[in-house]
Length: 283
Length: 260
Image 1 (cartoon, each protein chain N blue to C red):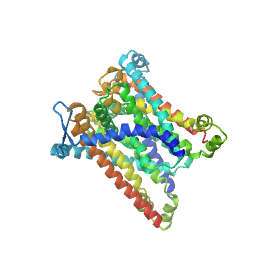
Image 2: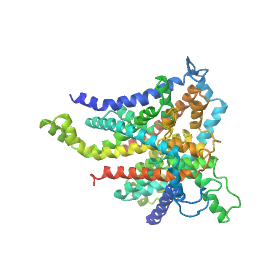
Image 3: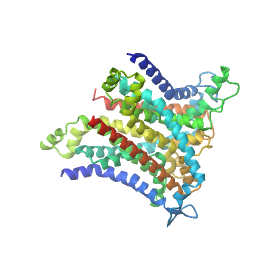
Image 4: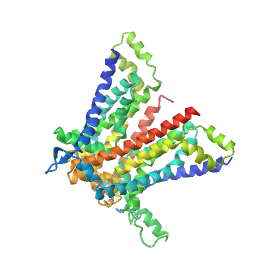
């Protein structure tokens, strides 16, 4: 009786997610092992060609360069996000929520509009260049838009809230006792941070980094709008294979690799959390 | 004892992060009232761009499409997501179930977009507004479910049993006991879901097909800004941004009311 009631309630939701997420993703994986049809369809002949092609120097170079952009984005987000999350974690509990909502709010608004705002700021006639020219700091407009710099700014802008949130949940679990014990035992603030706080919040650092990295690598809008289409990220590669080159199996293989990287990184993160929890109980 | 300088240094940093997050948005809002078209110099306050907005049929049309898609997807996902939340709260769900339900929130948009496109193509579903609605509802259910579940945290399950013991039917119990408790969560979830759908670009872009009836607002914006800065966008961006912020703010407030 109770079981059937539960099934009636959860059934539609579970079926919905199975049909529109699990099955499509499984299909993507299956498609990645088939050949491309002559007219852009899929020929159901098994092959590993798509994955072999992905490590071809041409594509390996795209992997490497988009990983580099995503990695810089992750590091910048971390440097920006850690002190911010730490500051919110130090606040009294009742004030934290408001500050966190303020961090999260931009995430719930239109991504394209937020990216467009950076096009307005960074272009050669934009506010930043005009201000610097007006102040006489520079003689000619700086090339701020349509390069890797703009992509990194745009991606950091979009994803730093995720980083702050992940870091906050890790830092706020940490009571002040350990820090106090460390300083009481004579460690400097810097030493305490480096030897106590940072190691204990590493799971948060890892979780935030995985999300920022994966979202950046898979992004195609920001490289397109702020990078001027000059930098191909994995997201652009997938986009092209699906909508321009119409090689769905190869595009599927790239997507499968992105998901594979994400799962690998999340597993590493989970191991970190487990190890910390074990150490926590042992202590 | 040097906690104070550290704290103020951190506070200053946090302030800068907020400037980074909101500065670009504020510049865009300010420029939407700028008389000169190009956002270079301030040439006086004007509502001209807002007036022009209503002459732009493409934008108006795309906003209409997005409102329709978001409304239908919200109705579907609010019903299914709320039931899901109720079911999950009956008994502690398994880890695998939790992972399945969180998956649509974690998976990168582009992967969800191309997997749905592949799926629709396999089952020969013609693309259009309906396929965007289906796609959006898939990830919205997870968000709705997560928000509604927060309402159950302080919910005493025994009052449901009491209601049924006293002879109320399942439906009456839901209407008179469960719903009043979770209603703020359901409304908050619907507002959040609506905003997510209205602003969603990538999945809609891949699963909308070639028909003009399924060009959503974000797709229209993308077409306009792809080749550079266009002043027409500032006014509509400001409106959409403020409406989104307002809906999210409302959603937060409604869901918080009872806790306080």
